[in-house]
Image (cartoon, rainbow, N blue to C red; front, side, top):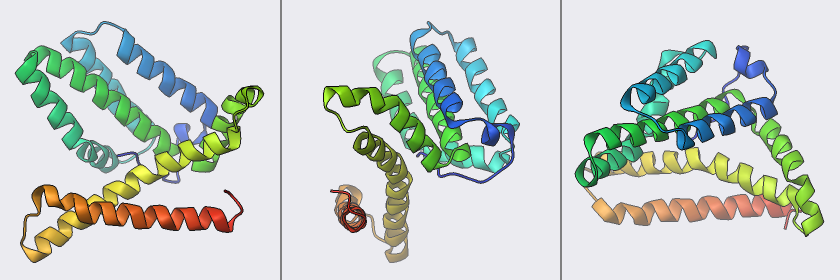
Length: 197
């Protein structure tokens, strides 16, 4: 769901990671706190699409990012249509989609090392409270980096189902869990090899 960095020379690639992270936070707050109507949500989505265009990303990248989010959008929209109203479904789903696409644009245009450095600087004051900012920043960056890996594992499980012409249904969680645990062990071994407990 969260994309990996794509090298480029667009305006968003050149902006400092801290500025982009702050802009994402402000955008998420505005989308979450400001009382929206269907038209303002449509405008928000158009602005996000425009930001992808300004960033120099091909339209295909935006379509791939949107496709990755299809299940979140579908489940949220259907639940809200059933339990609330179609208008509420459009507003809430549009908010979530806008924020997730903005987060995707951040990770597409920002190296993980740069994000890690910004997070480390932001978390440094917590050292006075006994927290370890390096470990916290590493944990956050590993979480962000693992999301697309998990999406890749899910795609592998689906491809294996299609190749064998079977439908595992809920049981598909088992191979996905095995892949996730194997990946976690490999990451743990790599961190231990570098002296990170």
